[in-house]
Image 1 (cartoon, rainbow, N blue to C red):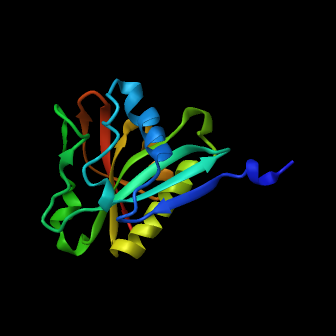
Image 2: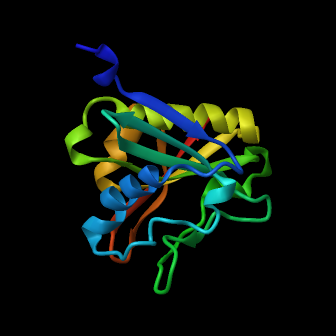
Length: 180
């Protein structure tokens, strides 16, 4: 038996290289389709400026995530998804302190249900953190975690910041931060 067939492989793409269609298929299947969003909602306007990481297992993308540089003149607030009716996510309090720049935001993290609890999300998150430090010179990372994902991020060294809030059509979230 070929052991490589069973071994997951992680990949990363940095701007301006886009990720594969299989990456977007996973992102849609895990994050947007289950909550009734139309195809296309998984694609963000600035995907060409983001770092993307993913894990492939047995020729299928099973976990994905992305990181983008938060512009120096931005407080980090942004629409949750492409298209009409998107909820505007709140700003990140730590960005008021200019010593926290450059800062990145982790978004669109997801793992297929059959591949969860195998370390794939930790692999993707670590790859995004390291590539963000190298490529963007990031000092901190920020993210908006779905309530169910908070224990995972806490286990990876992230801390809760700001107040709880809800994203229309998706549910309760908390903002989180990690110093690099």
